[in-house]
Image 1 (spheres, helix red, strand yellow):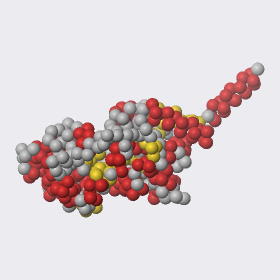
Image 2 (cartoon, one colour):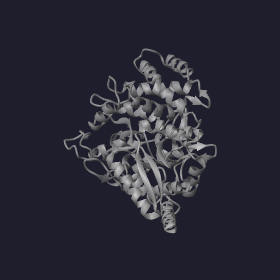
Image 3 (tube, rainbow, N blue to C red):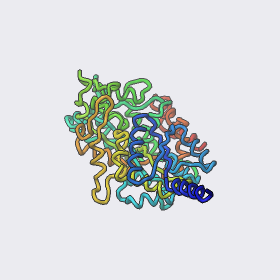
Length: 440
């Protein structure tokens, strides 16, 4: 009897020890997106025998949850997270930098867009695996630019010229962000300043600003003065562009399905058919634009990563990320294609495999169509290429946390608005911004 009990115990032990599985935290918590991730987990398990428990975590809670789990030695195996956590978590020992770097090397560094890799660099290693991203864009009326012989809005100079030519009694030359307590204004301002090479931070502190900031503020005043009066944010810019009342706005790619009449809650009103794709066919997108102090220009990007943690079953976690970024990558992007640009363009066999697959994924809410039916190949390639030069304040310097505090304080918004409203001069604006920067 004793032998039987030992045999049964041993059988149960070996059976349980052969069952493998990992936990995966995701901030894609919407029900439809969770369902797609659950399907991917099942597919991965069927191929590898490794189960994946997909755990939703609200983005606003992610930082606190990860810190608490790290203290308890109970981190999940893999976390899908935003750019802001990559370097702080690497420095805090939450991420297994070597394991994540191994995955990137295995997939092939050259298959990734350089921008997201550069933003995740810790020394000579990539601290987390780039998964997807989107770049903020100058959205413009390509037809009006062509009709008036205007160059695309790829620079301060081109945008200013287009404002001069296209402003009129029934057309605002631009719709800028001017509502100071909106994050939208913070994003647009950072994009405009990055385009001209302005960076507020350096390793261990902040940088005193001069001519480049002055030129950027003067440009921002030009686009603000070409806008309607009042406090403007994403809502007014989209509405006016959809109504054909402005030739240029700055927006995220989440506007792309709406432009094509695929979302009933935000219909184009340029004509009498709210489901028409007419406006989409007349629209161009610029992700990288430049100012006089930075001829190369820059793109503002929001990038998401997968990170293997310090408490992970490393080998199984690696396999899951490799699956999600290789044979499962089209499904990964398909969770929300309009906001998930491929940061991995292709593989060793086909350098454009994933860009091509992504462009054929259906986008939209109330109606769905692939991007290739709505936009030309040139347009699609251009918006994806924005990730090559993607940047954010503080990333390269390892000071993203400091940069975030500066942005969140919103003094840049307020001082810029004072200058726009002619309450102070541009030199006074620069001085006031420098005084605030000195506090960080």
